[in-house]
Length: 297
Image (cartoon, rainbow, N blue to C red):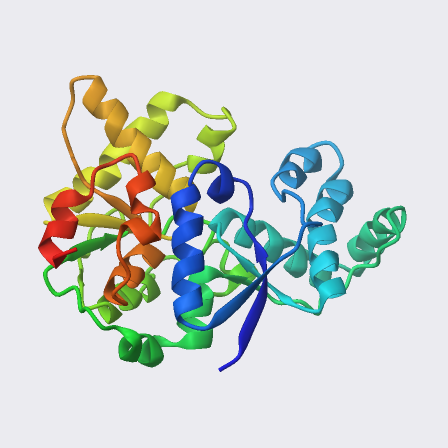
């Protein structure tokens, strides 16, 4: 298998969740997936903000990144579920609406570019599931995490809206559960696994911090109630929100969850025999030492 992608690192992973980027790079390297850095990529999130004033201009900002990937002849691999959602949304809308595509191309022409839908948009989790596959991942596991009970948290943008990414059933998602089970860990079903943490809105100051903390409380309580040792996310926004949420709850004199929040690649990396520090887990806000003791790391 010869997989190579243009890495769309986004903003949150390289700046606020650098441990996650380290982990993703280490795990993909161990699985012989080659990542190419593309300096000309730009943030996809301003497209959402610009769209409120000029819909086509906002979409053109996102589509420009797809043009850049086409120029280097590679498909895109995102680290962030929001980036995956934004880029997949652009591809879907431009495929469905010829008039909108013409207007976006008019804007892109000002920068000397024309939209191409050739590059595929993938997320690190969709590549692991679809391109590498459960069977190959299971064969690569050298340290099954049989002692670990892991609560999946799907978040929003990897599975919603389905027409954009077409990855999993947004009402009854199962693929992250399956990926967890591949590592040898037990996937713990819980009521909040497909809810929202409003991490994106909170990151930009667009929603109430109190509401964000209450949602984090709901998610963490649901995982803890069902006996989870950790929460497994697919997005750096979710990871950040669930870590900061439990810290703020503790500081306010509330519950002490002490529940490590991992991205799926962390869990997979541990099962591949990689060390926690090599996966950037020492850079996280919530101590995971008790989890690592269970697996002998």
